[in-house]
Length: 351
Image (cartoon, rainbow, N blue to C red; front, top):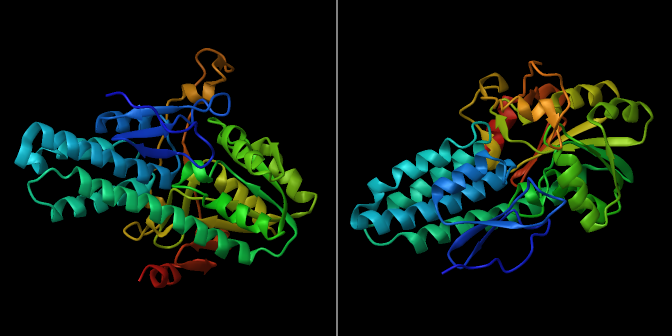
């Protein structure tokens, strides 16, 4: 029976489970339209992740966990007691949807561990309990990161953020924007300058929408305007999220983050990364080993459905870059804060 979502998406709703279906806020059409898309098949969830219906490493992990619930339900319906063998194809589809965000693989590993504990009966309820737990834990982790990150800020000051690391990119509240929300509530942030974040414009479409919804003063700027703003003074921090953090503290985040960190160091501005420990990949020694996703060059050759580059122009479209640990002043996680990260400090955090 067809169901409808219980609400229109707000900045708190990246993923929502309702009456046996997964609903994802379609982030490709925000802020022009706020609408949910519904999913009942894991293969379609994998495609939604690949196509950027949902994005942001923690939100991708939460979505993948719900995708495993749908996969388990379908596998049991098709194979009965043999559902564990039947589920593998869907798990592989989910794992192949995006290569850089490690939360995706973390969530699938956790769901696989849950699968290993189950018997031959219908696994849907048990898998759903695990997925709901992952979602709730991420929301709680974001709140904790918000508190810890806000403690580092001596305000009032202005800050710069890049891409979207808010509630839409997570299970709720946000990583970088969770710090912003907590620090603003404590009177430590005057204004947020949001980089527009080409080519998907997440800063313009999503970060500005979230902050305006919460009544937090936000000014949008072109990515290339950050340096002149820093030179003028008044910026205390750059605060960003992450899609994968290597064992030595190198940070993969949205393309343009590395340049922002270089500019921040030149201008004496502190640089904060807020991310849950599920984003830390201790199996990757340094940022050089992090796979960097490259997407269709057409995303860069056009804007708003209109081509802006000449026909025949060649483009490169890496989605992420790696900021070396020596440019990072603080990594904020739900377990604690790592100042001036090194391999030894990251090992101590994750022990």
